[in-house]
Image (cartoon, rainbow, N blue to C red; front, side, top):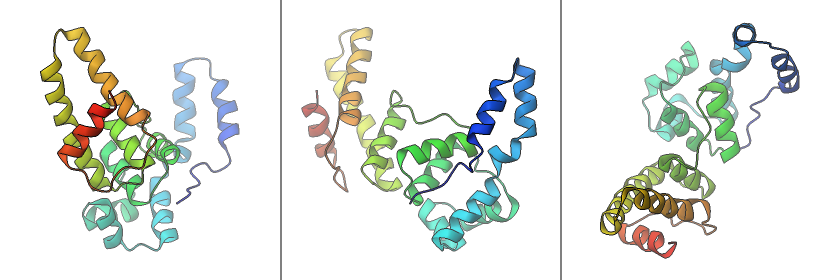
Amino acid sequence: MSLNIHDGRTNYLYQEVTKCEDLEDVHAFIDEHSSYFTNWKAFINHLLDSAGYSYSQFASLCGMSRNTIISWCEKGKVPRSREQFIRVGFAVNMSLDELNQFLQRYGKYPRLNPKNIDDAVTMFSICNQLSYTQCSELKKHFSSILQDVLKSRRTDKGQTDTYFFNIYYKFFLLNKTTAPKTFTTNQITQIAIARL
């Protein structure tokens, strides 16, 4: 699903923010234009209307309660966590760029960072069009496998940290193949070890 997160005022906002001379100017700018950055209620309602989802259908897709979706759409309440924003991204099949823009604009959260293992797994899952449930399963299995591998190869702290980073960097950032739709511990172990 292609989303239009920017409403055409990006260049104007960029020009205005570059005129700020200190932090107080930036705060004043944000206060003045806060509706541009946080119009969550309009966005979520547009998202449901354009896709034709009912509150119940969207709640099911996001793995949340119907009442949560109603509070977003009718009361304008913003999701409480970064993970809820990520669930919405999975539910509407956002691309990686769309999800990063979505996190920053509506949640005021940082972009997904490949140096963070959970974010790296999320990025991998989005790029391979996995569901949120499959992403969660992969996170759980991959973390436990990495811990087991690290325990068997630990010699000193510096070497362990480098080894840990290399495992998930090679697996998630350099993996060009399509991921299986379900994962077993054995499959993840074989992939992680083969990528070393």
